[in-house]
Image 1 (cartoon, rainbow, N blue to C red):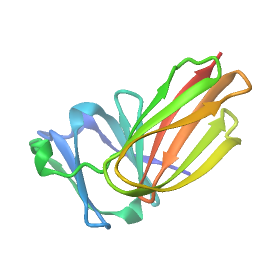
Image 2: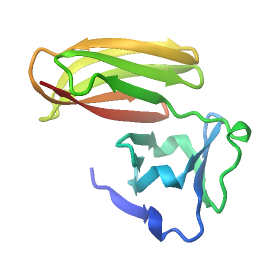
Image 3: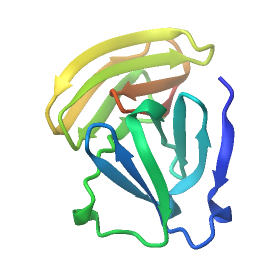
Image 4: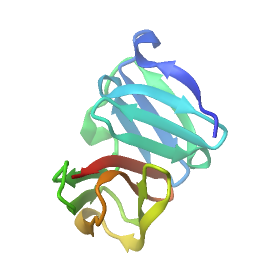
Amino acid sequence: MLFIMIATISSISNAQSIYFNFTNGTNGQYPLIDVQHIDFSSTDMQMHLINGTLVSWNTTAIISYKYLPYITALSEVPNIAIGMEVSPNPSNGNVQIKYTLPVHQRLELAIYDLQGQLIDQRKIGEQDLGSYTQQWHATTKGLYLIKLSTEQQIISKKVVIQ
């Protein structure tokens, strides 16, 4: 899949945040201070955050987005982003995948090795807003990508197994 960079954040004049309208009637805003760069293709939009998190949406889920010269108070904008932590990292093989859902969503968890081979897949299904934990036990040392997917976005984290 070919991605074309549409924005290096430092090149967006006066912008302080990016604001999205989604097909499910929700919207979200991200302060650009947290965003390293944004990639866009015909099927996906990916935001690379400074903390290493990758936030991705299928472009069919996005009605529109715009850069704003301000950051709206968080209480005014519903945030539909999933929060995810992987710990410990690096790990001896016993990994906790903690995630927080801001709205009711259908989830799937997938774990890939460096060759892109699917190692584990869990169709978690529907979950209400709240915090959850999944356990994963790696049997082989290496670098893995943990991907948590909803109908609207994908969050990815790397984990090192020693």
